[in-house]
Length: 153
Length: 164
Image 1 (cartoon, rainbow over the protein chains, first blue to last red):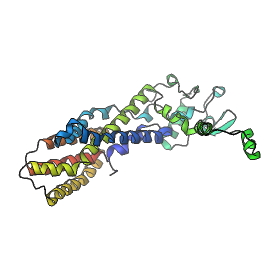
Image 2: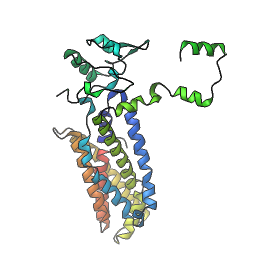
Image 3: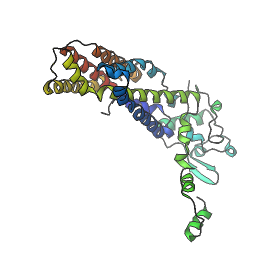
Image 4: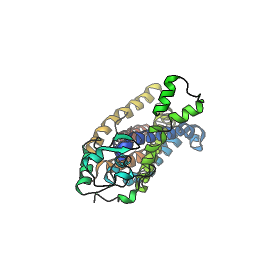
């Protein structure tokens, strides 16, 4: 009961550092909505007829067909946010492999970047090659205008 | 936790903390502070995408048990109502086995369809969802036992292909 296109695809839609959170979020939402299935099947007007829940189920399927096409493959939009979470303002300067690897924030050295697999490695190398610099994040908030959404195009 | 706090804990003379303060300190940094959730909604497009995936998961999490959790009862009622049906234990469990068996090749069709160029997984999901919805609505209009069995099998085939 766990093989399917959606369950294999949806985790890919989240940016890598927050992928686990995204999976948990959608799984939580799935169960919370699933809670309403018995309520609909027992207490709603649909329960007057044995066909009611099945009709509701079919109608929900048909309603959400279009939504699949609006999902965005977010790895195409921007690199995962964590690569510039930990860069502070002091470090604005030319990007290097080292500055992606290790940054100095609040006296603590943290390792960032270049650890999430080959896809992101190639993204970072691309950034280094084309001097795409990311200005730091203030208060954990990403300044997306430094990084246009269509930068790969 | 800084060095001073560690020293305080080691020396055993740290001030008492209430339970609420302990909870707040445990959840103040790291993964409990909501930074990962903020990251999922950090840009407008990312927020839109995340909301949409959550919505799709939610609605599918609703639609799937609406059909499958009550399938035994439904088959019993429906096979009893259509006149030609057999809603004895044999008949109902037979219909249940038919639909379960029809779910298996759905996975294989899904595995083949996601490889179609220019269509891919989005097209496969949309197609299977559409077909499942169509056959489920057709199932509510079925008039005899053969239609009930056939349409249940088709709905099961398509809804097993794309999700769960």
